[in-house]
Length: 265
Image 1 (cartoon, one colour):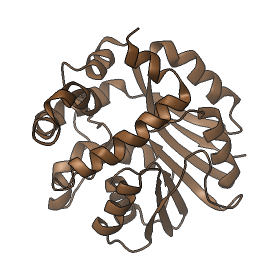
Image 2: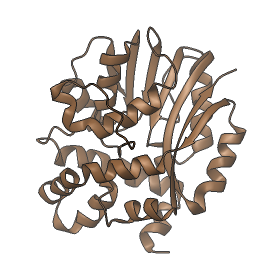
Image 3: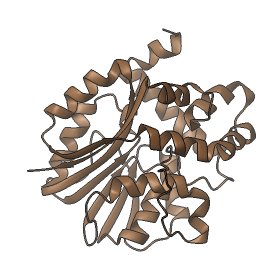
Image 4: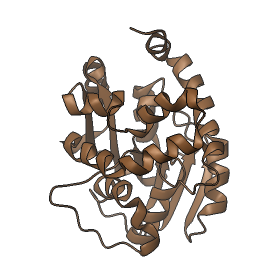
């Protein structure tokens, strides 16, 4: 195990590293209008979503959000997205699924500032906050969305407990993320013990791999243009560029990307 891998195995250190990385990344991408920080999703044959021309360049990332969020009907619901990144998913879901309210929350203050300036959409707001200390009353939300973020959390079971606290009875957690093989048992155990019922789950590794390939050229160009040379390997890994560790692990089966729909009883 490398020194970096050993550091990432310590929850408090992992959180501190991500707290530095995401604001840094937002600043480096400030002039690029990067609205999604997640990987992507592409079916075979393609999904065929009808998109506005302005959304087309983000098609593969939007398709991941579409897959996760449309597991239930969000129309007229009060929705929270935990770890909303640069807000592209929040904007698209609000414009197309018509929730009554949509709140995007993220720990990254630079990202929240970007979202507040970039996404002028009715019924949506962005707030800075911690995924493990959600600033919302008990039983106040109909749905919580969490896309490709929980691997950064030091206490994943604590996050699931917080989600259950803020959901109304019958509310849903719509969730997707990845883990390496040595983390699967811990991941699955936390999910089995969560105070939520599993409605459905799916391994979407193949679709995410195709999404990475769809975005590869743009991702590589952003890494070369926006990051210092010494950070190119980390940037390629973070972006899921073919040849980088995350892409190759997903391709080989060492990494699994899955989605879930949970319901609060």
